[in-house]
Image (cartoon, rainbow, N blue to C red):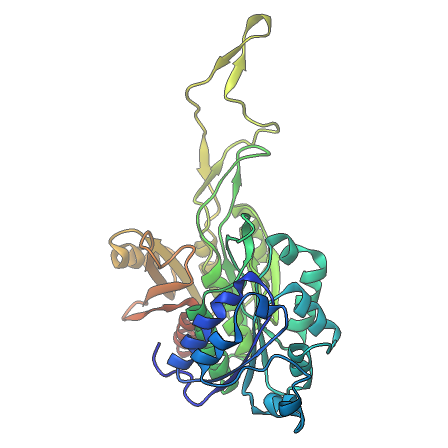
Amino acid sequence: MAQTLTGRRILLCVCGGIAAYKSIELVRRLREAGAEVQVAMTANAQRFVGAASLQAVSGVSVRDSLWDEAAEAAMGHIELARWADRVLVAPATADILAKLAYGLADNLVSTLCLVTTAPIAVVPAMNNRMWLHPATQGNVATLRARGVQVIGPDDGAQACGEFGPGRLREPPEIVADLVVAFEADGVTADLAGQRLVISAGPTFEDLDPVRFIGNRSSGKMGFAIAAAAARRGAEVVLVAGPVSLPTPAGVRRVDVRSAAQLHAAVMAALPADIYIGAAAVADYTPRTVSPHKIKKTARSGEGGATAIDTMTVELVRTPDVLADVAAHAQRPRVVVGFAAETNDVEHYARDKLVRKGLDMIAANQVGRAGCGFESDDNALTVIDADTAHALGPGPKTVLADALLDLVRARLQ
């Protein structure tokens, strides 16, 4: 990454989890981006990563105790807290999230977070069940309400052998999110007074109580746009398909499952100044949903069973959310669609722009490694009747603001 954090002072607080080993790379990435980095550690963090390694990559002595006589003779933890432009807690364990939510200060890291006046960012990392536990979710909600930036966590394989939300976001993405946060410090509320409705994520069309037809949309692009719009002063309603993503700060979220539910929620959220359809809405849904699990065998005489080798499912069209918003009596001033294509991207996107009566469309090519569905990065071509703007490739958090810049220009 280029020198995008030049002159920024980052106090990295490392807590005790297996993901602490990634803090070495995180320090390296932060310094590559131009930041000055000092590291503080909990006692448990030292069981996973050595202070000597972090000192080597940061170039500064590591603080690990409130009882360091040499440092604390001059109230060193106060000076360290004053020094920071931003406090970054990574990995942030369930324990430290609870301590920060309740204002506890029983070790160096929790004390630093309580005494600093700098913005705080936490990067959770823990077992997926710990992350999803109501206590942890409540603590995270409390921190968000206080203005703490929550980065991640990501879905993925975990050291415990399980899979799910709770994986530490990768260091390059953490740095990218910090860049966005620092830029936001100087961002004016240029969308203040605007109401934005955005849809994000997939839809699931049920076949029976067990199975559904779905797609690979993670919702990350739409959630990034919602977060950026709220930060820029917009009133944001986020209609979200079934995803495991935290609600961005300042955003009203409506959870849905099917295309029909998404359509109803979007229509209920109108009127709005801006609509952005970032959701990957199913074009078709099963005509009938079985009330019981569909079996691959059929009963035959005398209690036997016969295998069913083929099955036909009749599909019917779902409501066209984008077209209906564009044709609505209370049509938003700007209607933006998304087009995820595997080939002839701009051709299909322009056709969709005209066919559905949109103002703009953000087209991206999916099926490529490291971009599009399920990725933290993306590349967009934003098309209107006269022009095409290439955005990226880059983090979705960065592209979100770039897209909103184009939307704001269209409003003006």
